[in-house]
Length: 202
Length: 254
Image (cartoon, rainbow over all chains, first blue to last red; front, side, top):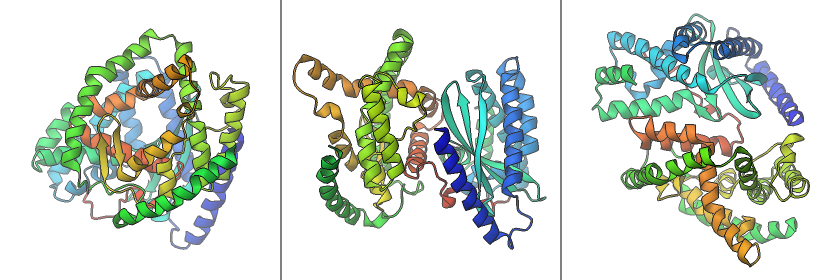
């Protein structure tokens, strides 16, 4: 297992290196693979510390929100999760929705914290996808069960590297939310305000 | 042994794959269907509500009972066995996909768990760090460029696509329990294999399945999306397809 992972690392690294050499001229200000890796390592460490910290899951919601707001491009992610309905929103709806979305994500993830303890994370490599940013590949070991987590990192509008998507065992958080949210809005005859109200109760 | 399996299956399969790709040529090349297009949705939603009813009434209580009543050691052995009988299928499909590394891992895993592991009751292969893979005919057809065809939710069998549904026959043909001899023990093993595998899988993925079915406003959409994403990931062996990464440069006003 360890051997195979190393080999894959090597391939990913050389691939990423070749890609960044080719794209170098066009992405002078884009996030590098090492910056993305450092960001993910830092965030993963903060998350694992929060999970292990004593206290009820609910008591950790605030801390999770602060980790997210510092390291995740919450407005972009929230917008992407709205899919085709994002374009028709008013500025007031967008502000209300982003707040509801942050609360929703923090609620959903802290409620799952109780299932975890004593995890360790190792970073396997990082691959540059140019305009779409860098994807950092990691493995979380949860009592012998190894879960693959990929983190998409891109520069935000101010040129700061931020996490944009988390892909757990092939399941992208944005893609899953987009499928769920657009179906909910469609079932509400396109009423985004009604959807935001519903999101607050989920 | 392995050579004969390979030659047995490769020729008819290639012909079969070509025929399938002609039928599905409209979508050839796409590993999973575009989620916005779901031409069988009205049919699928009917089978989905039946499947969900069966899960609520039978499968979920059964899997919960299995989780609490059966001792951990027994569950562990059952899970080892369920994964062990899939290995010939994974081996043949790794070969068909030209993935020699995965074929080699799987052959070694099968050998180790057949001998030291007592025909798959134990899993020493994992202990010594041999990677585990899962490959089936649906993935092989996808690697060969056969399109998925529309998404379909099958009665009792759950989420699938036309391509993956057609491949199920080939998957069953490579399950060793199909071929074990006669006698009471063999008959019981054959009859028990599918229900045991279903309950073991339902139990193993209970968080994912419960979340999709019972913690969302529209479980049909969540099941479809989850299946298609996991399937793409399986076909690509965990590699990222750049096209599927969310793009934030569109006219999103956020």
